[in-house]
Image 1: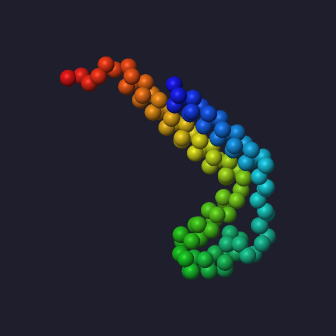
Image 2: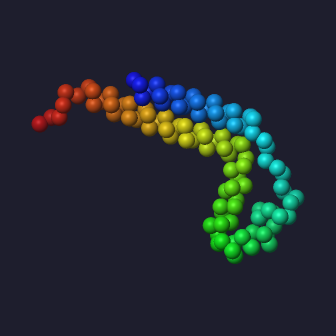
Image 3: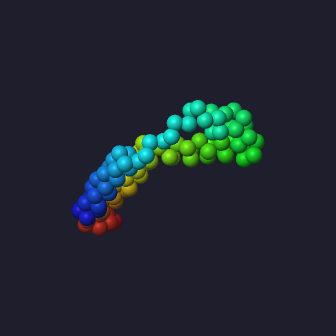
Length: 105
């Protein structure tokens, strides 16, 4: 019973926190006209790729995406759903363990 309550609390706090991050977060800057970003400049993207490889270019894109409040909110929701699901799963296992009389032998 305690794990289910914790799971519900985590789920509610996660959803509330994600909403708070989404609504209070600053919108990402519109860098579509900026030639200094790797997304808009082939020269900049090629320089990153030559210096640190494709993984560096992917990491650069990921870090730019993580500045978006929408992306942050989605990550918070997914993490809270996973943790709450774990709580519900272990609560179910615990309930099954309490119902049995012991090992069958």
